[in-house]
Image (cartoon, rainbow, N blue to C red; front, side, top):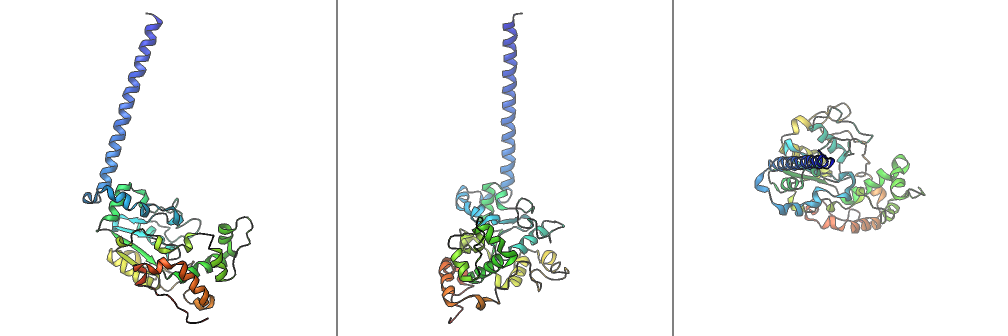
Length: 306
């Protein structure tokens, strides 16, 4: 036989192999996609609405909030939780790691419990967009968030980020080159944060795009009782909240023992705020105070005079 015939035969074999491989890959992708979609529909097929994807896109994934880029999901208790920096988020993440069965759920440091790459927590963005959107739209799921009085939260950010560890956070965030911008007063912190933006002092009302979907809103000022109320509502209090907390593991969650991030801002308000600074901070967080959900918890004007 001629060399031409062998070349033609070899080409035909290669072409046939490529065709079979192509059909196999397409079939594999089709099966995989179907399984993913079926898994996504397992939550509640009646909520399968393409409109939800666009409606809830910003709540599924929002880079503005750093490591709080997406709400947490505890499927076993049908809970979707939006954390906000400076509103107990460290303890809440420890709680969620405990609910997921991690033995080292108490650990805090070296990225735990905050870093999504190592904390092992389930985020809403881990799910297909359609499934995540359906979960947010599903009335059988609890959508929870805790909020804090804006001026108190701003003061807490100041005390935490400027006073601890020589103000390293501010140096790394706001003046990496000069490293000389750490303010020594709350007013100085206010002026600095006009141009240095960070989730720790971002307006809380921006955390959720559609506040009407939230089915549970707790307050930092009543964080122990509100957390207990939340956990009771999802049948998780006895196992995860009633004990195991505090230095000796004998307290309830958010019990007597202060967390590592506690700044005492609740009791040092008048020490740092003047009437003028108070007004400036209120104006910055005007949208927080205007939000109907926030209005049920907070009022403006704590100081009556300088």
